[in-house]
Length: 208
Ligand SMILES: [Zn+2]
Ligand SMILES: [Zn+2]
Image (tube, rainbow, N blue to C red; front, side, top):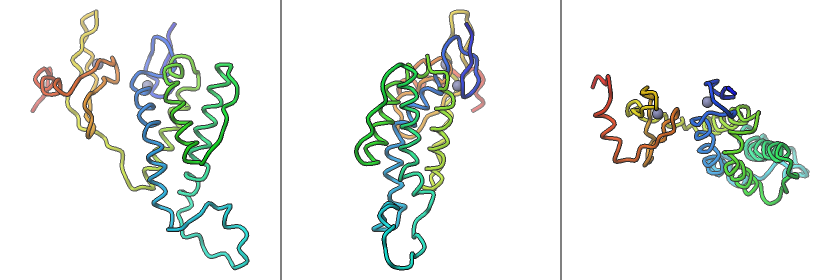
């Protein structure tokens, strides 16, 4: 059986999401609750959810907040993650998840749950690519409000792993700030920090 990654369309032997995109999705799901918190700083001091603002008798002043932040904070992120979570649960024949607590807790609960289900999602969930794409777009929207560009990482060379037929993997490996190990996006072999320097020496055609 052959298949392709629902996100990058790379050929896969089985499943719906390639190892690299699965790893990236997992990292995004870990970052999203922190991004959600950070977005709070972009609301004006004392700003409250829209529902608290309705019954003022005075003329409504213009909202001193970024509407996009309100969308992402009050509903956006939580609803997107929760709807994916309930679809995954339905696909597995499980019941609907209970939704409770503050929006902050809901974001955390849904992203954790999806993170813990990653293996199943990559292997058995046909909509895995759409899920990964939507989470990536949501992170992009949050980062653009925060004015932070995603860390593109530093290119440290190509993967030197050799498969059983003697072919060198060759995937570009990137190091991100603070990262102590690198997982190859193609063959998933793991480089520990002590390997980084050796990796440089082993490069087949590195100019400098
Ligand atoms: Zn992929
Ligand atoms: Zn590799």
